[in-house]
Amino acid sequence: MFIDSKILCQNILQWSWNNDDELFNLDYWYEVVDINTKAFRPQKEGNLTFRGMIRIDGIGGTVFKA
Image: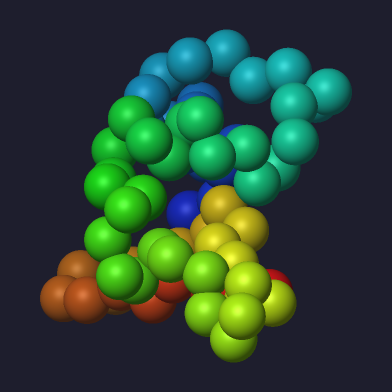
């Protein structure tokens, strides 16, 4: 299952979603995860950064960066 900012906002936080919101707005993610952990920090001299999507499978998770 993929969770992006829109799914996080509407289904997990149960907040209203505005289509003008940016899909990778980190403000939503600060509510549920610690963005300062190693998995979410930029890599490759800042070229790879968290863009607001994770994949979970019930056991583990994957943080997507671009």
